[in-house]
Image 1 (cartoon, helix red, strand yellow):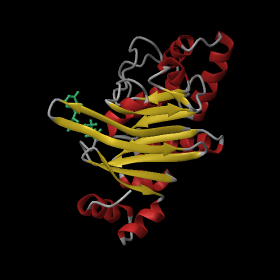
Image 2 (tube, rainbow, N blue to C red):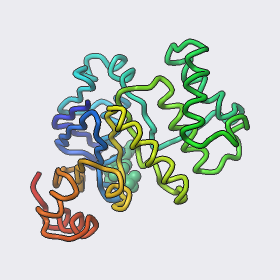
Image 3 (cartoon, rainbow, N blue to C red):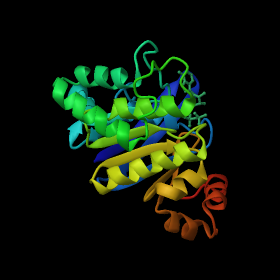
Length: 242
Ligand SMILES: Nc1ncnc2c1ncn2[C@@H]1O[C@H](COP(=O)(O)OP(=O)(O)OP(=O)(O)O)[C@@H](O)[C@H]1O
């Protein structure tokens, strides 16, 4: 479970994130939904302890990430916005390398890599060097690598950005399976269809501020709209209340 309490971050004159709070529960998929520049990536980076918030704090399974960033990070698997892979390594070797960084045994790494390769539909390219991989292939490897240690909390920054329908569906199905296993999943997106398809809870951010929090049904009700896109536009232009 991830609890975010009033985090803020500025870059010079730009207040990228202002007092953002949210809770992502176990067994649920929670979205951070916002337009370009809304502050999603900055919020995610603070949540996964890559940058330090100027105000507020983040707890991951009750661990304060400012006090104990190493323990907090160990509880998370992160697909960051930059998905750099080691080009000379194969997909399987990229996954294994992360497993070693997590201190896993070789037998556990092998078992887990096999499982992730199968579940994410990577068998055909798992033993190829990742140099030249398509975007969808790269994202799958990056997800498998991030989740090699089977973390309780799964954080993904725009996971299906630029992916085709088959890759998008494979990732959605994977996230639903992880949710069924009781994992806490938090992802950022600007794609209404995506959020609508998989999310239980949605936090709407705009200009660094939380505009609304609720299920899709609740957001439709509070905005008086009939679909998430219209609700989103209404909430960010009318300034809905969290
Ligand atoms: N390193 C940085 N230096 C300066 N400004 C930054 C930096 N990182 C983010 N910002 C600014 O903070 C604001 C929020 O950016 P952020 O990347 O968090 O938005 P986002 O919601 O992830 O957007 P997108 O959907 O376009 O990726 C933007 O105005 C952006 O220009």
